[in-house]
Length: 392
Ligand code: NDP
Image 1 (cartoon, protein in one colour):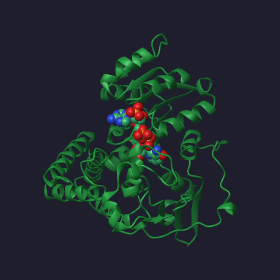
Image 2 (cartoon, protein in one colour; image 1 turned 45 degrees about the horizontal axis):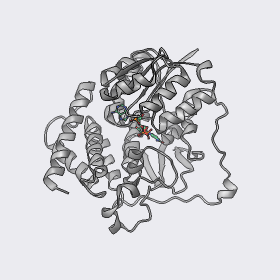
Image 3 (spheres, helix red, strand yellow; image 1 turned 90 degrees about the vertical axis):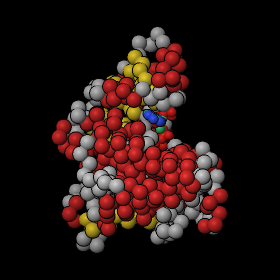
Image 4 (cartoon, helix red, strand yellow; image 1 turned 90 degrees about the horizontal axis):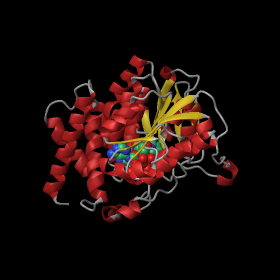
């Protein structure tokens, strides 16, 4: 029986994964090794019972008593904390969903690779912060990383049967987020509630706000560079308000392969879960005749400054991705907590990168996870300092 683990099981990606696992036979088809979550211990316990997991892990020590109580008498082990997440990743599994949000997802996924697992990677921050390290670790241990981000799954699928060297450009699409059609002058006053609603995709709050600012697309551009190895000028972004074309690959003979589908993450997750087979998936089918029109436009660099920052990160490479992501996470925390405005986030990230590039090490090659985590901590410290100085 195939052994599986789901990291971030209680989140948006985790719930979609759980849904597919249950539809595909649940505990009679899979041996569930570990399920992990954060504060939602009630849901984590429900999932652990349904899949008869060996262990359920919460990221937070103070949540352990609740988790234990919810699973008492089931024989399911419980544990808490960052160390317990790593230990859970050390339990061999054939397929692991990396669905934790943020840089916290890096270490468990990295550890799982040493067991030669197949890592279904939704946690884009892993590739952004430590791409070369992650890919080398996978190669060293014969592990496989399968992209779960819809755009990257789309590129992966569009490339089937073709050689990477035949690719001229790849285009990833973006809905434009909640504020695509807002007048620019309104953006500074955008609220957290307004930024937390996505026109097409139902996702976690953080990625939804990152879609409005296009920091999510910026992360995806870097992720594309790290996963597929394309040069920065081969990677393009187009606004596509319908979110039905997820990515396009243009080959050197002028042909273009595109991947289309309804905006439902269960396609990309299900593809990674069943790869290399395609199985029936419970996603709505695209009815192009009823949709009628698909539209595309260039993103406005003034509205979406995060995209230019992504270019800079790809050129600097090294630890710039870790710095970029950490500064972005700090700025996003501050926005959610009401400490800074929506448009201030990009300024905080840009200034953090500028300050860090004045020191040493930003462009140094990524050689260890510790160095990545050090840069992550340093960038958060610098970003917090900038926000404290600005008092925005
Ligand atoms: P959610 O916020 O919905 O879920 C995050 C999960 O991680 C939850 O299980 C949460 O636990 C857990 N978690 C939160 N903080 C920590 C922490 N510090 N340590 C360990 N676990 C933690 O996020 P999404 O599912 O939206 O996104 C997950 C990842 O997938 C992100 O990297 C995102 O960019 C990527 N992604 C998401 C897509 C989507 O459609 N949602 C699409 C493509 C990529 P709890 O809720 O119990 O506190």
